[in-house]
Image 1 (cartoon, rainbow, N blue to C red):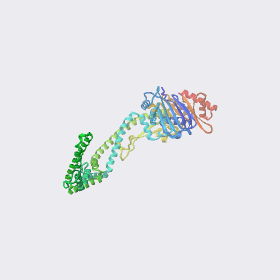
Image 2: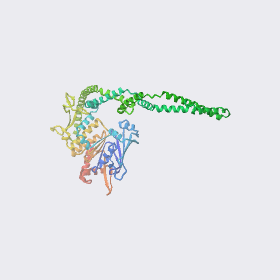
Image 3: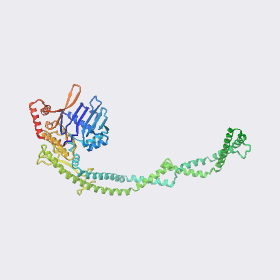
Image 4: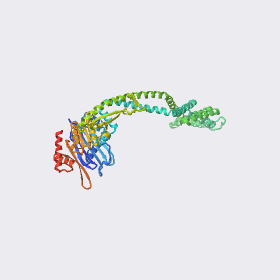
Length: 581
């Protein structure tokens, strides 16, 4: 049963498009039209809808924004549906609405199921919904790295399991190697740092500073340095409050306050208000007496010892040496000493750490060698099955004698490699294997890398064969092929169309093509048309049925819609396609 995922796209103000609706049917949909128009309508729009890069230049001149909306049918249990619901999207009867808005200023917004979402979510959904393949993908297939990725994808869990373990060990080896290099190449700098720390810590330990000692000493130095002035001021203040025994005639504050208190105390019974004042004067007298006593005690206890002052200043000078080097205050100096001691312990432990890391480094390299061998074995087994399946598909694409194989090898090295198969080899984050897809297009031809041994048409068919094999092992609901038939013609084009129709029995297939032999096999034929009123160019899409479809195929065949010969050929193509379904 065909899973109908992408039902329609609505496109507004994208490039030369004002407003268009692209309705896609289950099975095989062919999109044709003038050169480049179909690609703009389908490939670019679908790319935006599924999280592709947004370019403000895509917005039609004079429009405020371009909008692409898509209506998709998804299984509520699928990974895409679950991820969309996690983001807050709502599905209605298995239908998921997606939209992408691109402003003329370059701002981009995305909505899924009525909820605003990051554009990156569209890309996550695309991985499970649609596989897009075009000429750039064909060129990508020429790169060995992409060929290795294709093989790993086909192998599935058989390679994914060992590769995950290998990748974890590889990352750890990189981290261990980096730390080892840091410890060994900077040994001199680290030794100098340790010496400086050790000297500073010894200097602080010798001084034995106490928290807050610098503030205490500063206060004591201030007091000792002004002892005479302080004693004189205290004596004068005491005499003013309590009187001077050597001056019996002098008037002091205590005597005056006592006289005032006696005066009001004698008549306090006549007025409560005056009684309150009498109490307050009495309190003043008591307070004066207490202060006078404290002043006398202060003066008696004041130490003006110059020897003590010299000792304080000497201690302050020693602490200043520390604060000049290690912190603003003694508290900062002590904090530095604590941190310095921890750092010194770390530096002193480098030799032990180097030994531990070296042992782990050697163990990881040995482990990587074993894991790399397991990867090679898994890839070799999968490569045989993958090559056999692709070769079988090529037989259905007018390449009956072609044979595809994989070359899996490792590059030996005398440098820092890992041991695989009994010899040191170059390795990387994906193992030690160099994977290359080889093609022998006909009997007697030696297998050659497809980058060198395949023509444009052959490369297109190899790409299609690979995707068909993927469809059986790792299927997605919808495939979009952008001119995957480039460089193909004649009988080969007919076989490509027939194979795409076969793929459409198990998935939704959308093909942008310029070949009538391919378009004839489609279940639905859409044509992108351009109109120009002399000042504005617009594009639209139209479904071709019956006589209209014959005319379009005639145009694609001969460039003449009304040519009787072209019409006859078009009708023959349609009949052959129906018979070949």
